[in-house]
Length: 111
Image 1 (tube, rainbow, N blue to C red):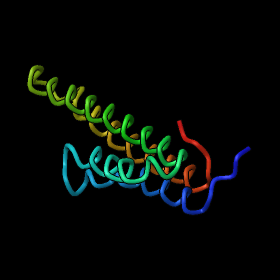
Image 2: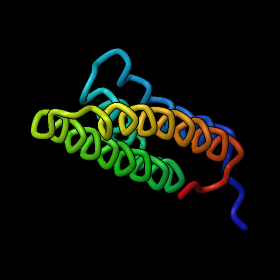
Image 3: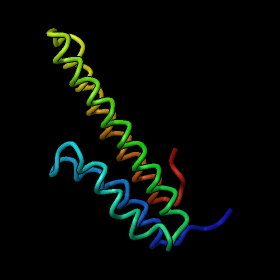
Image 4: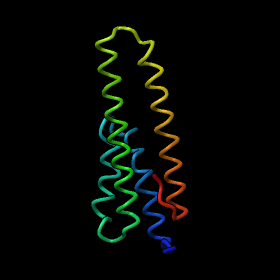
C-alpha cells in the first residue's frame, strides 16, 4: 500500500472540511470550499485530487437533494415531508463530512 504523506493527509482533511463553508456562504459554499482546494492541489497530489473530487461530488448531490426538498415544500404545501427531510439531510451531511475528514486525515480514501 502506498503511504500518504502528512501534508497530503492534512490537505485531504481540509478539502472535506472546506464544505463547512456552506455555513458561511449558503447554497454554494459547501461546493466552492472543496472546489477551491481541489483546483489548487489536484496536480500536486493524487490523494488530494481523489478526495477533492469525492467531496465536490458529495456536496453537489446534497445541494441537489436540498433543491428538490425546497421545490417539494413549495409545490406540496405540507411540511410533513420537507422539514424532516431537511433535518435528516443536514445531520447526514454534517456526519458524513466529518467522517470523510477523519478518514482522509488517517490517509484512507473515503467513498
